[in-house]
Length: 238
Image 1 (cartoon, rainbow, N blue to C red):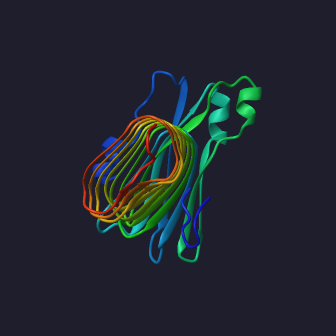
Image 2 (cartoon, rainbow, N blue to C red):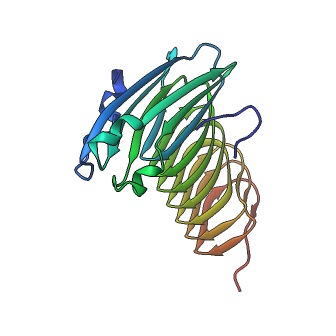
């Protein structure tokens, strides 16, 4: 996962975006971290289980992370943490959720995260499960296990590898779906090319693309397109 030079894993307008107390989570605690963003060009987020939201904020001079830790047992909350580190122009934000919770009978454990980042950074996300929303960043690479995702207002390339769950991309420089196991794909408002390399099942709907639209390998599900100004190359249906 990840590309060279790109690594990803309550304040202001984001206060409303911090995950609320959930009825399905018996024990919860807030988590907060902050990293100086001066000189940061790439942000890696390792999110594991839980929802994830990343918002580019104009004028932001820090990476601000807020979250809600959730565990089946109150005693295990302290072991659900946010880890951060900085190496040169790369910052890493990682959810620490020990796998032993399930073996200990502590029930499901997760960490719902909201990140505020400068809009000029590239983000690279590795996510286990849960919904995802990314907006207003320079470029995004996502490797996701399951859960619906929405990416919007991405200045450069969006590159996605996904196990299951719907994918929606709106307003991006270009889009590459490396692999999608199952779930619908909806893409619109792309200034460059749209390429789907390997799609398992689920519909593909594409519209308003300035460049080419290409589907290399498609398992099942309808493919529709509109207002594609470049070439269209999709598998033929027997």
